[in-house]
Amino acid sequence: MEKIDLKRYLAKQEQKRQEILNSFSRGRAAYDLANLALEHTSRSAEAAARLLLSMELDQPFDFKFLLRFDAENRAKADLVMAGYQPHNLWPSGWIDKEGFDGFEIIARLREKWYSALEESQ
Image (cartoon, rainbow, N blue to C red; front, top):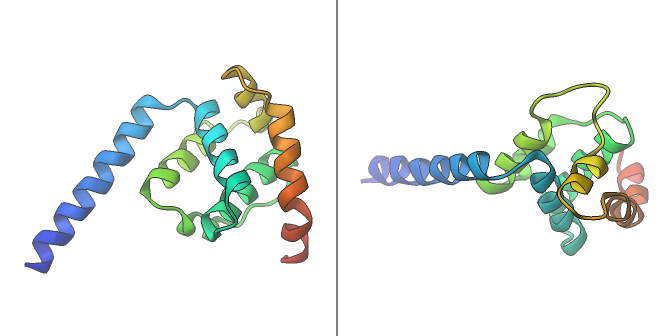
């Protein structure tokens, strides 16, 4: 019985992941992760902040933080990291392309999280 439940659970998670990968852009995924980090103080919110700020500020990111995401936010993180190009690592620019003020959103993210993240390293 447990094996069937686990298979069903994993299938649902994969379906949710595919829906996100098929319907979100890189900018929309970054915007959603930024909102997660701005609205919450959870471990997944911290992971979202770390990911976006590391890309925006050209700082290292420890991939162990990806383990803090649920399937939905992990898919968004994967989209943000997809198509890695060293000269195009600015989530603020991707967010801008979605019609939101990426600079302001990243500034708020940095204000909320940057000092706490520096202290924890």
